[in-house]
Image 1 (cartoon, helix red, strand yellow):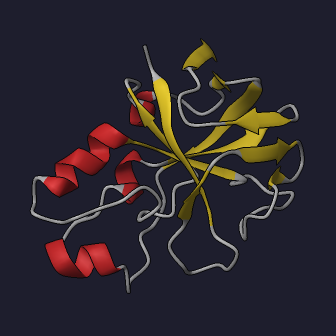
Image 2 (tube, helix red, strand yellow):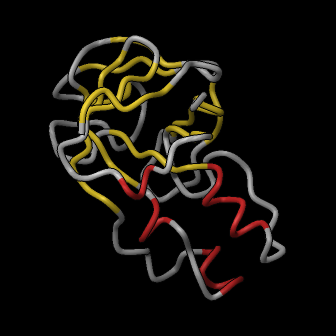
Length: 144
């Protein structure tokens, strides 16, 4: 079963996100209290723990939120989902709007290892309905 391992927010752009007990999401906005909330196409970022494990094998100690992901998952290969895929996590539905993104040139992880998984493996989504997501919630592809 695919699940949410951690949920994270940051109050200021350009900083690592930190784990929280739950996130509250709103359509046309994103995550309450997150610096990246707003009416745009990257309201929520998701990253698979399997991708983070690839970086851990390079000898880097990493925690949830270190890649600025809002939702860390396990058991679902996020990077293979096409734009337009609808995911259900807890009671929330998310629509995938972007796969990957350009890495910040001053990314600490890239400086340490010479690589970063977010540009290829991170995905972004908009919120389709209001709700709460918590660690342990099941996450599944509703339609692709």
